Image (cartoon, one colour):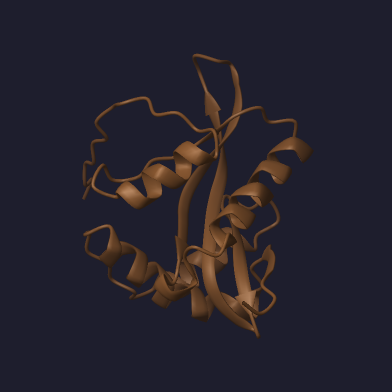
Length: 151
């Protein structure tokens, strides 16, 4: 496999991220509408104090995977943690350690910020991801996640 670089997304690459978000949502069996997403992601990724951080795996200037995260606060623990919102690779790039590179980079960023915990979730049918996360040393805490549309 040719060299893969891992770095924070640049403004001129956000247009490549949107199709990957669509593929990711399809993989997780949830609907996705790309309308307006590029503009909204730019707003949250590139403001002075970003609400969202996105690392991308690049091969020859093309995004082949991404991991996004945000800094959250835990009332119970009275400290910040990183919530990894997404980790996704194009199918043909899975199994080469790229997901581990993205995950390791989030761990590095966590250490830089003196944040001691990373949290994330994956659908219970995604057995491949569950095996990967178990190999990273992660452990599961079963909960149901609820969604409420507020219109």
